[in-house]
Amino acid sequence: EGLSDTVLDSLLSVKLFPYQKEGVRFAVGKGRVLIADEMGLGKTIQAIATAEVFRVNRLVDEVLVVCPTSLKYQWKREIERFAGSDVLVIEGNAVKRKQLYQQHASYKVVSYNAMSNDVKYLGKLETDMVVMDEVQRLKNWNTQIAIAARRIDARYAVALSGTPLENKLEELFSVMELVDQYCLGPYYKFRQECIVTNETGKVLGYKNLNAVGELARERLIRRRKHDVELQ
Figure 1 (cartoon, rainbow, N blue to C red):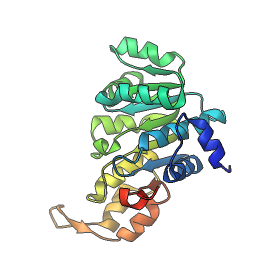
Figure 2 (figure 1 turned 120 degrees about the horizontal axis):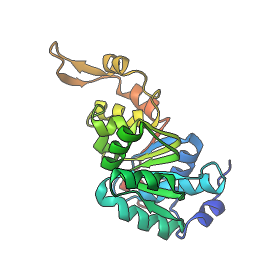
Figure 3 (figure 1 turned 135 degrees about the horizontal axis):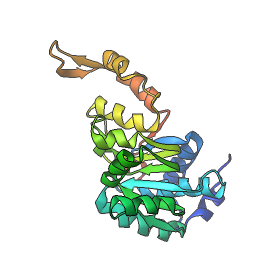
Figure 4 (figure 1 turned 90 degrees about the vertical axis):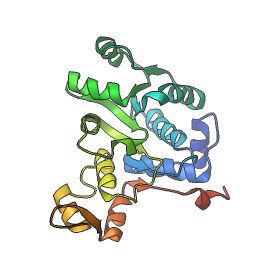
């Protein structure tokens, strides 16, 4: 409650911009969200600040960050730099990774590929909070990795996407599923009400976009560079 600027400014080693504070307040207030700001607006730092709010208030003990392989060490560096917290990168063979999951660390960072194999191997992954970076890569919701991502059991979730999902409603649906499976209703109903197809099932267009936008706004925040330039 009442996340003042003073509180937010004291969390990290850098000061957040007003729109970033708004993103953190949105994420903390909702508990499970998709931050879809344009590239370069600091989604990583908003996710870290959100995690720190939960950690400081003892709502979360461990945070699992799932990201593309190439970004694992970047996440580690940024968490250490901005939050000064301990970070464990989960890598190595399956046995080694299993041991690393069992160790305590404020943050654990794992790649999507490793996470997908681990869910298969361990059945599911449990954590207090999950941060999923570049979730637009999971846009085909029946791929192995997307299925595995939905088997991460976490009370809080922050998904990050830098590319707009306006182009394809199916992609928006699959990404929102990771955050809140009830937000856009069941898929068959969503298809029926929003996606226009011909008799062979080919997508011709979309309808009821305003209704989708209203529903998505419950869990999704997106700002463009020109919206926040003055900040």
